[in-house]
Amino acid sequence: MRELFDDLEAGRKDFDPMRSAREAMRTPLPRRFYKEATIEAVQEGHSVRLDGKQARTPGRRPLILPTEQAAALVAGEFAAQGETIDPMTMPALRLVNTAIDGVADDPQAVLEDILRYASSDLICYRADTPQELIERQAEAWDPVLDWARSALGARFVLAEGVMPVEQPRETIAVLGAYLARRKEPFRLAALHVMTSLTGSALLALAFEYGELDTERVWSAAHVDEDWNIDQWGEDAEAAARRAMRRVEMMAAAALIGTLDRVA
Image 1: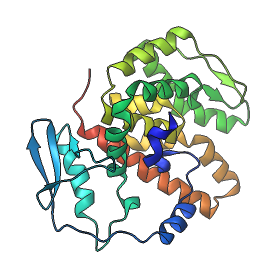
Image 2 (image 1 turned 45 degrees about the vertical axis):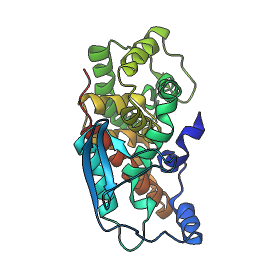
Image 3 (image 1 turned 180 degrees about the horizontal axis):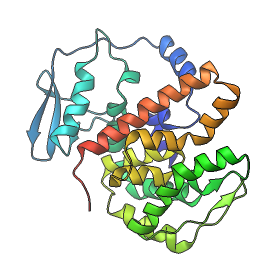
């Protein structure tokens, strides 16, 4: 399952930008080989072109996206490159490559991984102390649980502390049916990235539904972390990792925003 996401290292909670930067320095960046990045309507959707030639994924598949806006998002990253091509500055392209080369071949595995996150969703695990943190969690997370119950018919069980709680089978089944209507590779890949970065399938789905914007998703995902920062300050390397994760999440959110809405 995880090999589907080799191109999305930045989408993992343990992503270390310092390590990635050091590794990138050991590998010279390829020189930019094209002058212009454009998009063209084709039968399958919208194609990304480099100097008029079909751009391809690392798996040599055509870089074709379902909407003009999605293709423009990727073409924009190509156009923004300087004398060299730096994949670290192209999060949407990396996500799209994974969708085409990996997720498209096994969308069910990706769907099931999102459901595994939902079965132990971040927003279901609450602190029992201090009161300020309890209140912050409730303010950020309770509205999302209310949305899941009212809009999706999914009722989640809450727990205090870190002891695991088993969610009702009916709840996971409802979420599975909802996700099954969203199994197109690009949307599913983006939802997986948002889920893995936040630790919450519910936050990702609430964004895709239109219930939350990106800032509310990001802040809700970092309630505990932000409380700790308020108490003891922030480590520079942790801040760098967080900034990189934010870039990746925003790229996933941007891709979702370019796709046709699903009922």
